[in-house]
Length: 103
Image (cartoon, rainbow, N blue to C red; front, side, top):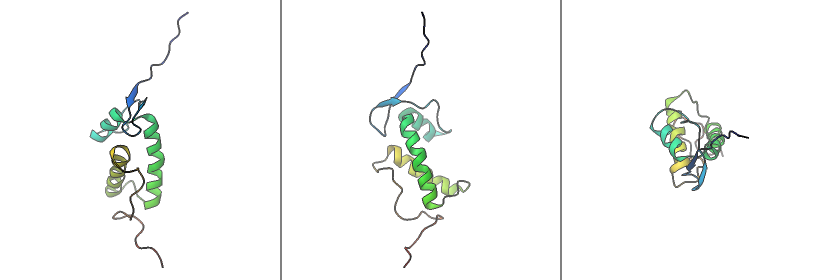
């Protein structure tokens, strides 16, 4: 009896430092999308999607605005490849909501 099984592609995940199932395809075109595809696991990318929602809501980013997109891409790169924890940066980005604390 023959059984077909789906082959799972794995990647050495730069975020988690271990081999984990890979993404099926680059998440978006361009150099960063290919870098994520080659070095980031599906598990880490799923975690990023949750983190991205928090960042967008925290700063009130408008994803139609190129400056907001740039901010999110910088946060994404730091989340996956930076030395930070992947948490939102302190202080509001230019054009975002926030500013000085209310008194």
